[in-house]
Length: 180
Image (tube, rainbow, N blue to C red; front, side, top):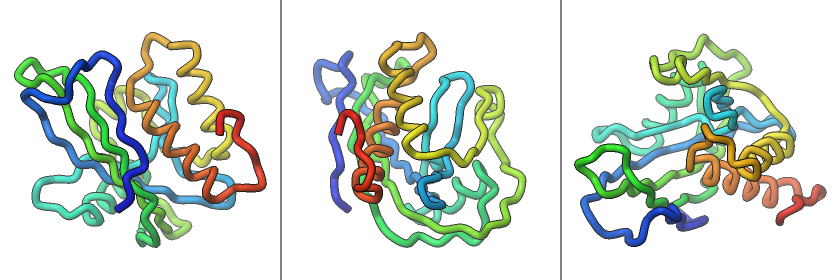
């Protein structure tokens, strides 16, 4: 799969050290210019549905499980790869110096019928919910959060906004992104 971007958190001086490895799969489900995203109230951001792939899962199995859990999507089919983002950032656990995360993005389809999501406790506590949103509105919202440096902002918003912009550039060439 094509590398879209390598990201290193500005607080890291090196990508060496005791590293926690994490592999994630993230789904891109579109209806015209609307995209199915997760809005998280605590972080005030839009992100892709998806998450960590379990050690006994392949990327596609993990992706489908995560999409079903977070959005309630059914009959999920992977139709194409977008690419992956290679990311290094500090880890919150003391036993690690950093986390290395590879986030794989896939274009998917799903049936029109969604079941009730099965969010984890921390996701519910953070106010996470699946929403259909115009891709350009999501990009603009995330960019405003980044620009204002909201205190609750996580580093993942940079990755998620970059991926949203890549999708918009590839699929919606009739519209121009301000920072493209």
